[in-house]
Image 1 (cartoon, rainbow, N blue to C red):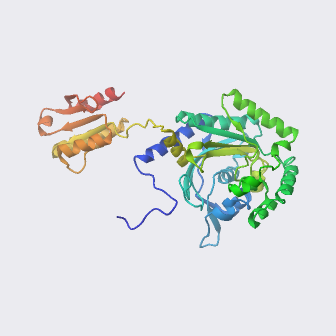
Image 2: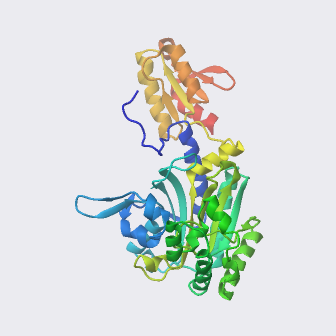
Image 3: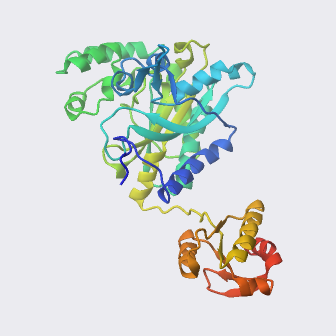
Length: 420
């Protein structure tokens, strides 16, 4: 056994399970690529202040969960706990918003890090696919992203997820609600940390998962009752566009999400088969984030979907993904001359796009055929000295069991024809 193990709260992706994660990432990314979103990749760590300003200094992510450190040069950096702030920073740094084609539509995939108490569905290292539409304030853009996420989940075969939807208002109407909520919270029996949080950002208290807090919030004022006319109209259009697209959702007036930068539209995807960690993804509009991190006014909207939790949701529903075999042809040489000839043919097959593997290590026919079975290959090519003397190899269909001799020089063309 190895001396080392993966750090607590992390995991390794290894075959065959890693194929599920790749399939989920591809399924989430596919509708984005089909809708004008370009791929962006940012560093795994950023300046601490990027997240303190953008995510919010009062959030648990910044105060308790962020992996922050100081470099030898004295820079204060943090492993990225989420993707939006990093992607927006990258877009601003590259002046993508000045190219004249707004919104800037970007998608990304990567690993993120938060120091949390590990449990099923909650890790210290986790994987997400995200999308951001930067530089446009349009209800159709909010609706587009919700529809694309719904499309991605349904393409995977997920059915038992729910979409929760709310509006958090804007800088015009939220301050009035904020004041009303603070007045309400001051009358509750809350611990010192929660009271302090309520003075900095009272909406964060609504996101508190503790039952003792949630019981006291039963009569809390709701933001929807304080929305200005503009926010009401904006939210109603988002709802109408989603409904027209055939996407079902639930209005959740207490939904606030865990990040400070959200404004107006906010949404969450939940799956009830995952227990306490039921959120599989979420997002919303963040019209003021660009200014928070030193950029110009760029109203934007986006989401991030958890790859790990999506895999767990698929397992909860018993959905088996149709993952093609990584190998179509498996070559089994018997003897040195056969090794030389079949290795060359495997190389040719790969060049024309056929997934091919080779029986390495001189295992003998029985051992090599076991490996061929394990590989999932549709066809096996076997050759010995007698076959090569006759200028042929034995081609076996692993599904039907049928076997036939074909010319050595016909291998590639024959397999191309059979595999399409």
